[in-house]
Length: 544
Image 1 (cartoon, rainbow, N blue to C red):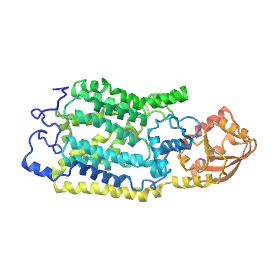
Image 2: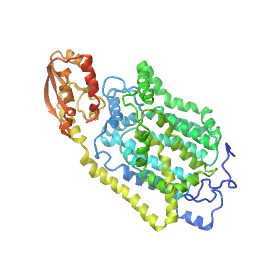
Image 3: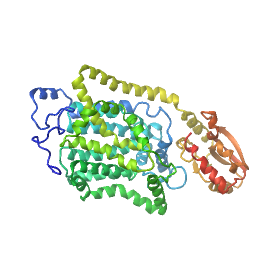
Image 4: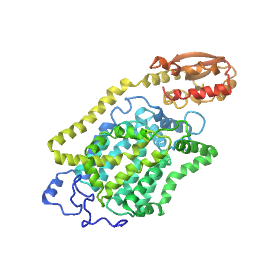
């Protein structure tokens, strides 16, 4: 009965998920045969299956985590505020690279980075560890979810599929927000699935409190996109159940206070600290991004159509091969588990499609449920194709870790053009005398900041740098900037002593080469035109 709070009974379960194998249509509560019991007795226990998946995922995500390549611009957006937190103690409203407060991104992952840096010191390995551990945790979570509603073999395969997907390998080895965010979103969905997957639609207080806490932490990781993802999935599940009970059980509970406590306290504290500036930054970051008025503009929905199949590979290929069985299975009226998995993915796309700004990595939290569905297809292949399927998937699950070791340990270090720039930055900035401040001019969201080895301050406005020169009163001012700025109209009368410059990776990128030196005289030409010129040049300055 739609909206019932009782698990579906065996009399009307049909093909509802339970301890069945893949797409086997045996009723979940029917007594297994003797041969089935004998077969299950050979399967690993749940604990052993999870440990096996964790070990397998660790082999993919942990080796060469720090030595593969230098930090990217998006990684520095997370790591640099963490470094600044440890230096100045501003944990609520940290700085990024200037003296201005940085509230564009919620600080949860930066807090985790700061905690790691305080123990391990700053390193590329430590900056990427939260993402790698989140990727491993996501594999374990998919195993546990599949174990609850399918059979042990499918559960084990779900964790393995999650580990070998392209997006897992990429985002699980980058110190960005997306993988910790995906783990929190998946954990919140898992709370609902463990309750609703067998036909119930209620949500007892303890589960509701855990669900809302996880949703709140997801907001604290990446902002209001979290409740949009989860809310759309719940609405889709309500449509599939033809009942509002799932939505009501989520919203009309005292446990909703856990969400506001977990998510809201930082926004209140940040507003109390910097006032309307916080509202301006949040409006620009969230509202303007949705409306297409952000600096990054508008994108077509083709961003997701073109990229999701590749990001999801090889699970996307597996699902394509088994699409008939997948469609037949999800059409069963009592198959609540798999219907919720599809709602998680399909209805979760809604806020991404509504937003004018689109980026492929935004879809990462929507992809984990497809690993479980792909694992079900693999189970049918193993049953129907026999030895041929075992050989095929053995190559897949053995080949991916080997390929990952080769890519992470050999290919990526050789292709890392940022390494020379990072070493140059570390070398030249170490020459700044103690007690002196280095000023980075116009580097915007650059990836070089964590490699600076002296006291420094970022400046993006010519008027601010003109004030620095005025206060210096003729004394040399240490500067790290781009060659393009030194050739700009604003610096035409500036006397700059160049002490070092990195080599651009291509001749036509000469203007983006980092230049280190001292301003020893002259003046800066500050007009609306020169300020606009600096602002326009900030685009290429976002990374070496």
